[in-house]
Image (cartoon, rainbow, N blue to C red; front, side, top):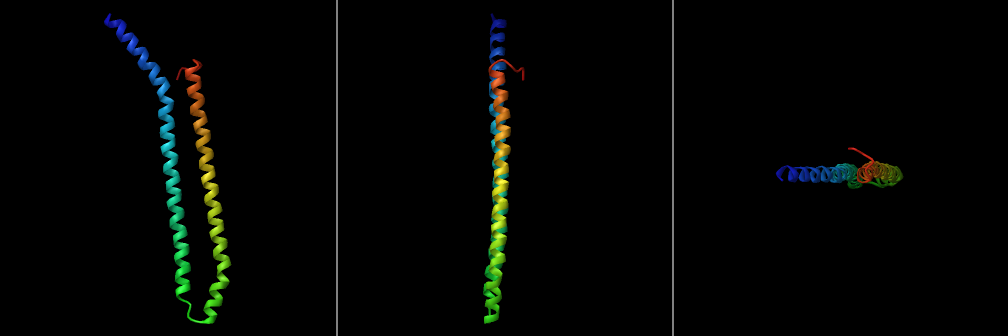
Length: 121
């Protein structure tokens, strides 16, 4: 009787591992991509903060009409830099999303294969 219970428990454990394995993989993938997203956001925040602080420093140094004219003249370059930075960040976030979707799809297909009996895992 004990051997039969061991076999049943063993079979249950094997099936559970096959079914839960992809869920664990998906959780790990989600955490990894979330860490990458947070890292990207912190880097972006740091860079944009430095850009804006530079603008504030330049504004604080305005002492004459000529300084003001130069400052205003540089605003277009500043805005172009910020726009390029934001566009690059958006592309990086989109790429991260695509990576997540592709990897999650692979995990889901693996799970489907396991559940349908098509895979041995």
